[in-house]
Length: 95
Image (tube, rainbow, N blue to C red):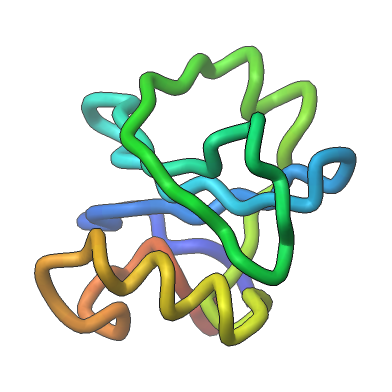
């Protein structure tokens, strides 16, 4: 199992130290992430943000939509303009 290389649309990352998820457009490096002053894993508050490659490389790991807890899925769905299944980058694919 691996990650899609073409036509991803979006990628999902998990930041273990902060226990938060980050939804990233790999072309523009714009993202949706938690407002860090809030930091309540049971009630995520999300906002748009710019994302650096260095932050993703040093502090995050790729995650699948299936890896996210339901409360996070609900919060992220607000920001998506189509069904998560339609974004190839949110799911691991058979190699």
